[in-house]
Image (tube, rainbow, N blue to C red):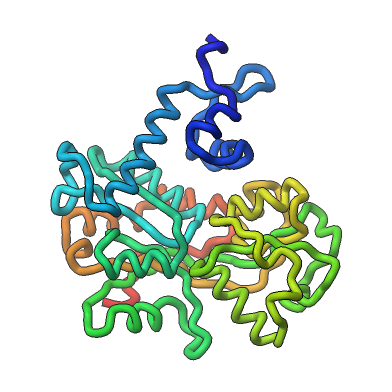
Length: 308
């Protein structure tokens, strides 16, 4: 049986990712692994199914879906784009389990990229946490700039804790935004357009610090989990990310800011049957409980209409 299963490096080759990313995907539940003693192996059918689903996300964006996809608005699956968050991953799993035939795909591309894809009609729901330095608000100013005169719906999801993700015990004693000026630390950053990157750049400007002072500023990961993994593997001293990502790896967390994470959608989805079902699911006690268990989230206003 073991000879028929795939090793992590074989999965990495098939999916065109690193072996470490395979381990991260197993940890956060994206891939199902089989444990044989201390070894980790994978069912080829499971990997093929995952690969097929990933290709479908690309097809949704390109508008070249096969004809058998039905049951979603305009005969299309529902595509979520935007900022990575473990609470979104938990919500997506619950949606797929709760609603049969609900084709719900997620791709974590960053807040700004998500909004731009929504503008061009390339997705249905966007998750974002974009801080506007002029108003001090999250998300609303950006939505108004990108969609002037268009009716856009903003639904609150969670408030979440953002801060330094550091090794257990915080050996280098990080404590606040001023740590960005230290020359003894190696950082892991996020991609351009990510809400976390925008927040970081805001505080760099506020502290009058050039990007060049940060060792690792140009070293990029696309999710909070991937950034936390780099810290856990001693490949960086710290990252800016969510408390839930730090907790997932048993790392320490220094709170810097509580930020707002919202869902953004156009009327065509908001007023559809799937839109109504999506919003109703946000209030399910089971979903709220799972998000709370992740750590670092405030769910008391989940599902509240922010902008309509």
